[in-house]
Length: 204
Image 1 (cartoon, rainbow, N blue to C red):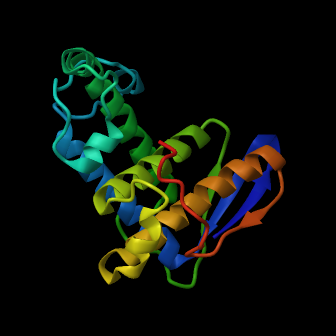
Image 2: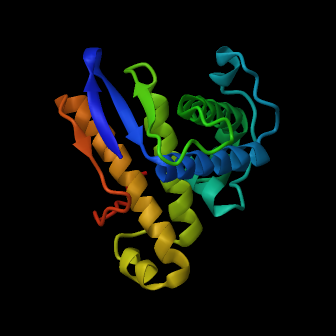
């Protein structure tokens, strides 16, 4: 992965075949997860996606959904009342963000030529959707494997069943950190496929 600055505070994301395919697959899984919890079909009208109307009144049983839609209040009654009128709107926006990002990747459900780089230009307008979507992916992954505290990482890396997922989590962290750094500095950055940087599972 490599990032290049563009004029007007934009950037160009360069991904190789495997990276682009993996990111697209992760976003597709996130979309499926969100749709499974949605009480209505997503309206393509962006205005609808911004509405905060409707939702359940209880915390989702799925740990990934519970991490993506945490209770806003400690008291169950207050949390449920708030969730019942805001959850669907929050879900709509996460869905819209994820759909915008996967559309920008342009794979259309298929894999690109394995020798070609996938180039995506990210503008200041589209940057928030990218940041929110990559953050949502990290939160969902952390919840799935029980990566709740920094001390959990060594144990999960030692486990063959979760090691690969932790490395994907780290890779997404590298994308997020590099995107934000290049936007702030205007300098090109690159990140390895599986960086060993310490994750910050408590950054939600």
